[in-house]
Image (cartoon, rainbow, N blue to C red; front, side):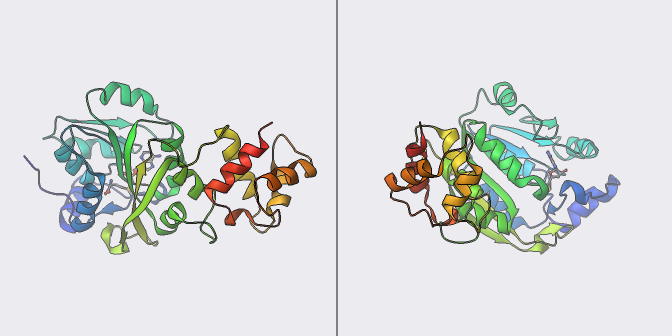
Length: 289
Ligand code: SAM
């Protein structure tokens, strides 16, 4: 049975007031109060009765309730201990949810998966993320190679644009390449500030990252590939050659870098932001010793 939906200004205000809860800006606490946006997030996650859902930052349980309705098992990782009593109340009707009181960046996600998602099909991450830690959270989800299907997250608009950016623009950078190497990003919807309580002073976007079975490019050494990308963007105004000379580790001589660029068919005066994933892959393979 569905409990009263929390996603409205009056219900959210009532829960918050009754529990004497004070919002903490430092924890990115902006709770969703727009039902249309909530529905779009849940729909984009494509959950079914066999699926698992991992939520990061359940807040008072607004999105969590919907996930409990749609998925077989839900795990919600919440850092703020003051919300545990609230969540006990708002999720009391659901037997398929586990609240993990932890900082998601400290949490052992593989252990959580082994304990709570052994009986589910693929797991999706569905969350209205705390913006102050969006990039570390997304990078952790990608780099830990968890068996994920989709990552559907509310993030700051600029961060979503960086994740989905194509080569050539100022949004394109290491985050774009990491996200696009592991996933296929697509923008689900733009979200106005009025969709939250309290309203943040930035615009938001829901983005869906469909986790790839295989990366779109094959490389001999994945660590070298990402190290190369990072080095190429170290100083955005510098040419590729200059960045690589200063930032590649272990250091390579100028003529070694020039020869690798030449074999990969890449002009050394180009800037890192103009190279496609394929070009980075080609260059990384030319730099393998
Ligand atoms: N899901 C709720 C909603 O949509 O209304 C709340 C979203 S609010 C933007 C972010 C939530 O993340 C808050 O509940 C906050 O306490 C929690 N949070 C902040 N930092 C966290 C961290 N490092 N690990 C886990 N949760 C965190």
